[in-house]
Image (cartoon, rainbow, N blue to C red; front, side, top):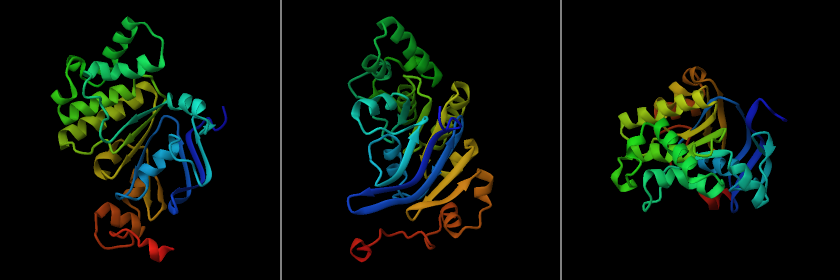
Length: 261
């Protein structure tokens, strides 16, 4: 398989939203088996980058390869690739009229022809992996924020994807629930042999489990290295982000589009 050492490889990438360029000159390689944290302030383009990895947003320039192949544009081929990518959404995306077990079973029922009994056992395994086997019959409204996030994680793992993407996995969670989620991400990545990409602005909670850290600011990657290298970086952009300083090279206000034009 080409680029076998990299689960994700991005070269010369530019991403536009309408007439506005969100990201430019993006070069990124995510090693297989690693946990890579993609960090940056809100609105910097982290989720836009995820849209390119999952094929939701077509690049304006450059290439995106996922699991050894270019992200396809044809719907059927793209669907096949997406079966190999588990995504944990910010808002969980659980269907409120389905129980926890039914939510986890949904991808298996949609994308496989497995017998009901096999699906039931698989759902039990996935819920057990996130510590929620006893909550199988609960509805989303009966779950705490942390429990709902773990059910969504179990669902994202239902098809045993080799690549997991976490979009702001700690949003709305208290410190204890956040610790549980980060511990689960690390443990599952190692035990299942996954590659994980965590998009977040929660630096201090994420770096302890990350193998690599990438920082996006002002439309491009300003840092790519190990967590220890990040914490000792003297780059003004990186220092402002890590320290949460209001004044610095990363502007608080959105750029004036009329001026940019």
